[in-house]
Length: 168
Image (cartoon, rainbow, N blue to C red; front, side, top):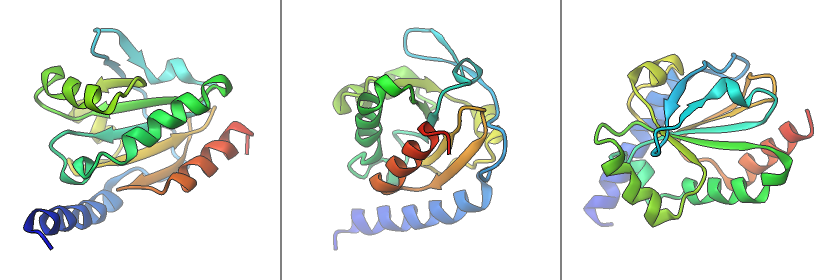
């Protein structure tokens, strides 16, 4: 096995353990935030109350996030597939390099859903360390219904989204 894959795997396992111990569990209210997208538009989580929200924290420096950037294309697919039914996908980049670091990754992956730049205040409010990725599924009332530290299976996300859209 190539050394870079062994290192990435070790970082991934380490991040799962750390994030698992830190991220807010389901059944808590999702902490509100107002963050800016690449165009400078303020995105407020409270503006999406009444909608199902998939909130994904990630960064370009995160080794597990970079392994083929598996989740972001899935989230783009969900954003397009369920668009008419109202779920919202929001990516929160925790990159210190700002948009000059983030935009090339988004362009490469053809991501069109909302992505904002996060900060330590937001990541701390969600009980997270700097280890990523972490994804939260939020119901229409603003309550966390599912939390996934590390990569989740497409079927698990889709099943939860379907249940939340059905009001379950």
